[in-house]
Image (tube, rainbow, N blue to C red; front, side, top):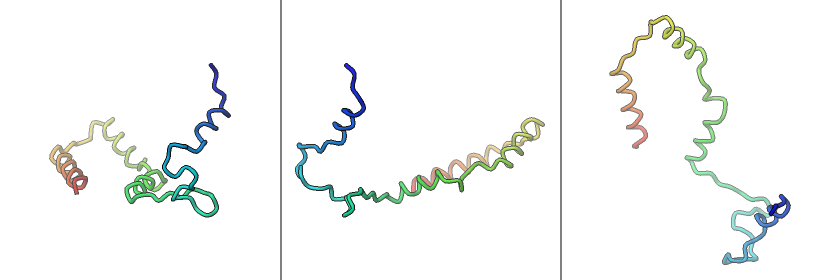
Amino acid sequence: MKISSSLKNEVVNAPSATRGNAGAAPANTAASGKSMVDLSATARSLASLQNGDNDVNLERVREISDAIAAGKLKVDPSRIADSLLASVRELLK
């Protein structure tokens, strides 16, 4: 059985008769008929991570890559551990 996209859209967009207020408009619908969405602070924070302000520092990546290739990269395990612990503490706040 083949389902056409027009039939699929009609079923998805059809109002549900099983809801309590079958004929009423949703509470988050503006007078113009467009839906309104209010994002939480966490959602806004996650959305801000998608903009160009948080891109990778390519110069720093190149420096580290060159140091690894030259065998000059010095790893400080205690600094890494301290940073990981600080990150976990921040997440648990």
